[in-house]
Length: 106
Image 1 (cartoon, rainbow, N blue to C red):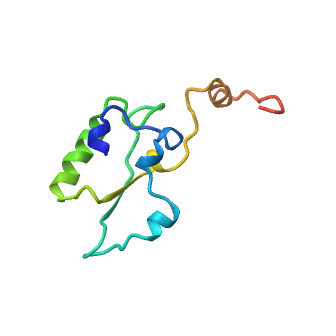
Image 2: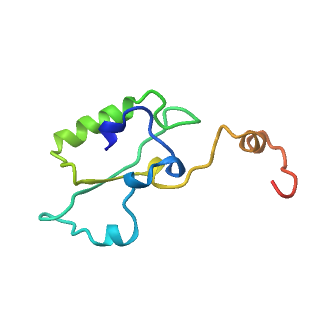
């Protein structure tokens, strides 16, 4: 699905439900030589706002998965896409970064 969607990687909260494997669905997989392959990927961000703004890392990842003969049934854990992310472009985040205090309720 990563190759089909194209474009930039999405934060966890923006990922379509069908792109996620969670709970019972995840527990139903058998992992190992005869089962589903799981790849966990973490890498340095290429910008403050987004780990891969141009899609270069996504393309490299697709190349590496093909090299490793990852099948369509393989599962991929990408920290940015799998864990909820702070919106670093939000005004409140920018104000906090500059040392301002937020008012109660923000």
